Length: 356
Image (cartoon, one colour):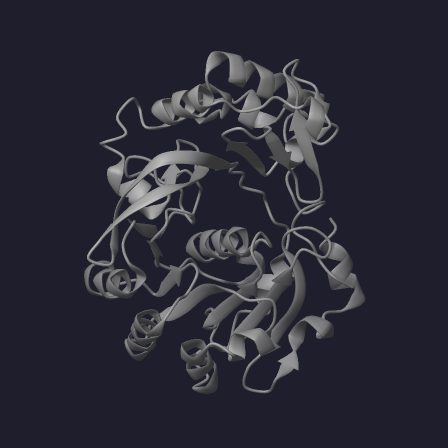
């Protein structure tokens, strides 16, 4: 039996129009970032969908149709605001995209140059905007991105996950968290799972007799916390400190020296530097939570630096996720010392509780 954090392990929004389109806090709504005409169309089309609350992305590409994506479907937006076929869809004009980009950068593309160079913007509420266009490269490094031609607006939500038993599999006999690696393909819920773990470890979980831990988060791409002007958009718990837009390898050492965390969390491990920094954190006695893009343990083993971490048994638990039943479907929870899939050992009653 596979478990998904998508539905029903997601707190149901107030109504189908969702806080993203009718937010309690206007500053966190997504429609305000589009031009008046385009925003009106997108709102009308989105509210007409049968699964508005499941919209994950809104994609704008110059000379291409406006596209909504949920976990399982795609919808086109017509000039009347309805959803239809590609042939009937509204085609994004250059002016639409530039007006949207101007709003998202508060009329100062120059001030957002560093974010543009990294290929994304972060908006209030934790929404993220991926960009593509023409890059200008100097000395082997991207200096700036210009002639931006496409935006991928990824809508932020913070589901409440009802999975104490799963968290219990990541706790050791000393009642602290194991070094844990979350493995998943893109868009399969690894960052959402990481936030869930950080929040619960930070606050503590009385039903597991788990005390609150001081947690340090190195959020290189502003995805975990969704920081806006120094304040996290997502609730990461009362004992969590965030280092935003800092390279993971440098940030891990900085946090350990300055904030004395008991647990550190990072997203999307990369090459040798990240692996070395994790090893140093472990030697300092700090517990590790990390994620990586891969479809399976076998795929992970093909990446040399990560294979070395696995072979050294740096990680005590590896959680494999998929989209089989929606984002956050748990495929396995491996105890790396024994190779046993602990997830298979959950009782039938415990498994059913995931659907509470």
